[in-house]
Image 1: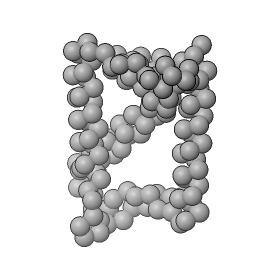
Image 2: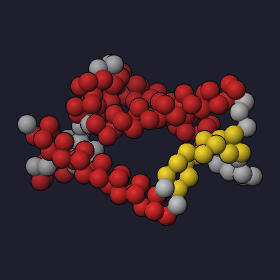
Image 3: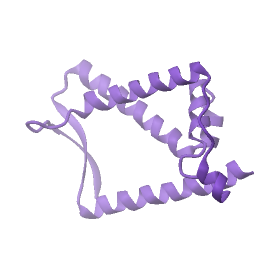
Image 4: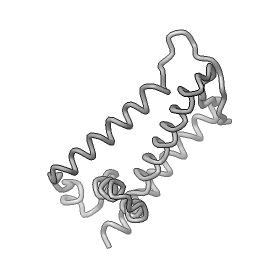
Length: 140
């Protein structure tokens, strides 16, 4: 079973409320700087060789549309990346609230072995559904 729990930090525990929002903001800044230069990424070799998109195909176009606040088109190019960016933004806002409130309890995902197995299978299923969508949308 998967569930979110609020608990105090363990001694020496990785500070997720500090590190991941900084990583997210660093990635946003890097992406913004990259798009300002106008540089292009090379084409996908997997798509060139097989005719099918790889799991990352459409990610740059999704990021470009996210940077221009065109969320609908961004979702069309790469639904999974769009969802991950939304989750990262949500976590960053939660972390900001956590730091402002000086909350001693941290939000963590807790699960038993069945829950972790379900989470892994669900993620693999989402990867597969995302790839099917990319095969449909990017090859059309």
